Image (cartoon, rainbow, N blue to C red):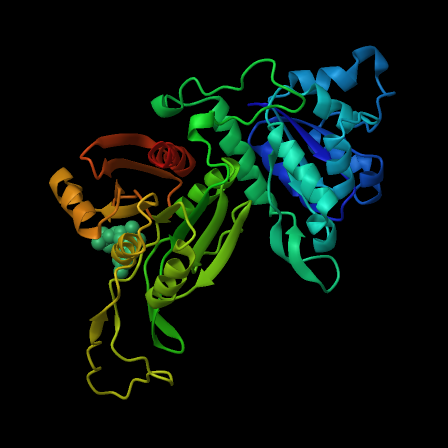
Length: 425
Ligand code: C5P
């Protein structure tokens, strides 16, 4: 259980934060909601009070005897402001403290997450860009808004990520503060006495600030006819955990997602594909400017030789066998592209789901694919696909093995990025 402050500023997306609040409370956290006065025009005080079970104030003149404007920030484990409007970002960047939310941002010594949501023009305005850059420099975690439908008919960057995704961000950050027996992350606590806004929770050495990463996620589908396909059970959870985690470390993240039905990972750009060949084209196109490429997707090794344009019907006779042909190996081709283009500094990571993992076979696969790291995770008997947990051994090109004990997919993602960041240095 953690003490979380949920700041809400005056954007229409405030309604999504009511769901975020519910998720935080259901996870056992104590949540104090601090709306701005104008935010109450969108969602009223009784909603926040009832869902949080805590008093709600917007100004510094309520419960003055408790010195709330200082105490709330000081005692929080994490502050998340969702939605953060252009106005709120500007006031936070300027260090203003005229209401309870901005005063809390000045007194917080814990991680501070800002989830902007606004119209594209406001997000792209140089004033907002400069404010975001300044807030990030001071250690605040500013999540790039998602692209998509905004209020009204317009679309573009500016959407608040889905509540489930913001909840996952909070849980990932809290897990980093309280590492659960994770040696790679041990000692990774927020430094005391950090500046205006709380510093990020990733040690500088493991930061991905300024890095571009491309991650494949999900499972490809190979069409047999307009209504049928050959596919696999991959849900995209591990790839999305990697994307969220990289974005929180400051990376510019692109996810090439094959048939994933999860909310878009916070802070990442999502490119959608269906088949292995689509993914091959998208990954090779994106890889050119990437510092790291990670193939978590379950890619079909084979596809039907032919796709029928009309639905295949049964006619009482013995059905034809499905003739298959091999798909390109994307990971192998990404490593080949890197060598061809002289991009030696790029880190290429593969995943391998194995029902019976074996170190020699893993090292041989790593060499065959030409990647730097291969994350081998056992599947079958309830492990792997679709489950919340994962475990793995990460093999490196140099022959080292890093075991990752059974834990959340988020925890596994953190170890993978620690290893990638070490190679990028
Ligand atoms: O050979 P195997 O399928 O076990 O290799 C797994 C790794 O290779 C994963 O990283 C997967 O994304 C990648 N892969 C690929 N293209 C394929 C098959 C697998 O990139 N056609």
